[in-house]
Amino acid sequence: MGKTPGLDAAKEDNVDTNVRVPRPRPEPSMDELPLLVPGSDEADMLTRLRTRYLGNVVRQARWVYAEQVRNGTPPLRCLDAIAWSTSPADGYAWSGFEIKCSREDVRRELANPEKAAAFLPFLNHFWLVLSDARMLRAGELPSGWGLLVASGYGGLRTEVDAPRRVARPMPLPMQAAFARAAVRTARAAL
Image (cartoon, rainbow, N blue to C red; front, side, top):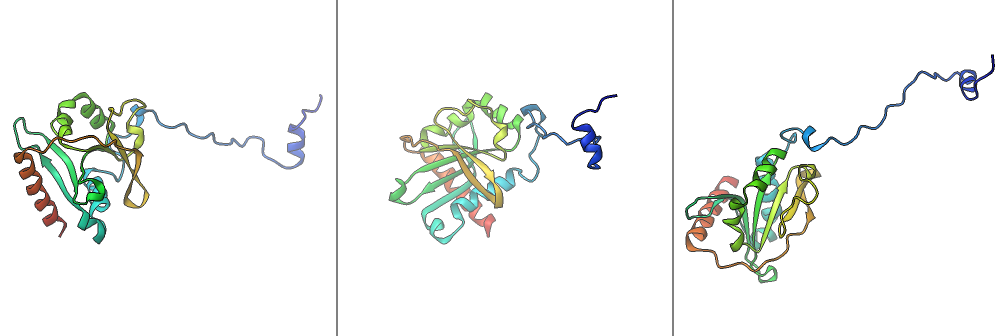
């Protein structure tokens, strides 16, 4: 019998040829993602947004931040958060945020554009906020929306900048709903 190159050398070097080297696991497909990304529920994502806009004294002076803001007029819609810059450096910009923590939640949002449409005309920036970027497929982010994704240490990173749009003046019922939500948010943070 002839010798098998490499195999005989492995035996001579006392190397176990039956050891299997594990293959790297492929990234899970969208359908294999958990329904909820562990450790990133809506409350966690709201905390990340709150920290982003109210995390230090300078930001507290520049932003008014509110969670669970209703549009104030029928049909009633609710946006997860709105931040309003009180600084001329930011052009007094209004930014809206819709949080999603599961692929199914993303699908529902994209299938129901009326929800965002109730707020879009009155916002300078609109952001989709995800606990995991893999929940959104390539090309699914609606035109004109930005994308924020949970990052390490409780933060958010910008994946896609939200372009600035010209916003119409916010109707008084929506302004009142924002003010009430801002007060509720501030009280809950104490």
